Length: 520
Image 1 (cartoon, rainbow, N blue to C red):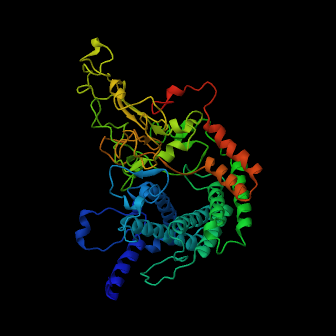
Image 2: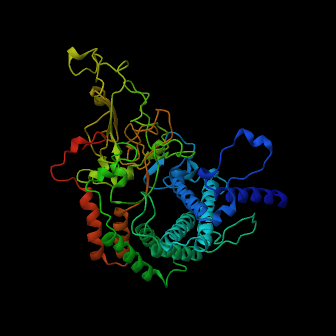
Image 3: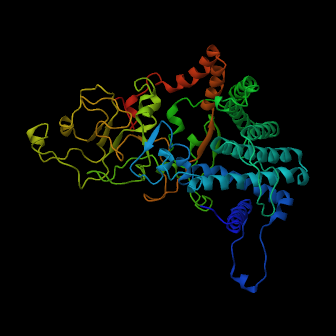
């Protein structure tokens, strides 16, 4: 369908007007007062404010808010987890086009546009910081830090864009008026800019932040290593042949600096990373975390969405007898159904990460409708008519077994107390489309890593936990992958083993202690 030139220009004008407004930190805007009827047209903030250190400090704070975007609303999972091996479309198919690449999936799909707009909004803020900080800051240390933050945010957003869309327009100067014409840069040009900006951030930023959550030299080094690794990908074989080996060396160099010089260290227990006990608790300041989007339970600053990652993974549990929706169990949007691949990729006997990442048991939290044994299924006559389980006992159990397991049948699970969901019944064959056992689109093993049991109500979508953007385990794997692509496997093994060693159960660790799992 053709669109008139006037219509196109109107749409673009509205879009870029929005982007300009996005550069003004919301927190700095002054609320309306009743005396606005006096018709004194006063603007609390405008672009002239970014010619002061106070205004630029506020703009940088606003840039940090853009890091939260990656954990907000539908785009947070649709554009990252759908279409991967680890997750299928669950019972709620509202965003299935991202996972199935159906005919109605295109550049006009809502999340694609939202991602584009927000990335360029953040880039425009970064451009303003980069342009103005050298002119209006006298203190050299603060000037370097603010400038480094600007270069990091610009690189971070272009890195997201080039991975998602390939070559995109490179806009490196701030916009103060509507602009309608842009030329698409090549992926090579965008990667060059990303690496240049991450390098400047690495050179300018301090090794530790003045406040929790501030971007540091080591966050820049981590992403710089990652960008070099991506640029060395075979995806870009048509243009990166002359730089690929040098890029792998740089990925190793910067990754190794983070590992050896930053002071960051792996959490002793993989569980520590996800054991979220309350907002701003100890697990959110672990030395393993290199950068995280900062959320809190301050509803005045939580923003429009909060951290909503917790919504999208849970399978439905509330409509089974003996159960009701509660805050610890989560609000089940059932968007991302755990795939067989995601379960089978783990060595579930020795690798503790599976049982510390997925929920396989639920405890009874409603006692007025607990199922009772009948004559046909009661293990003994005296149990007939008695509750199958009591409050606080296991009421739902997912069996994560392999094809060929002959322990379970449709008939014999009726004699078990909990509601039983079995991946493979006796005689089921392996089928990676999920067509086996009694798992279903709304009944599957839930990934529990992002659960948020501290929301202010059962129905609330607003999560409070921080969103991890970089951690040291990934740095180890970046370095190991760079060695592997060089076919230097002997050098890669020690870095992989650091992650594997932490993944293993610790000596005398009680495997039954994890209420969201156990050895099947």
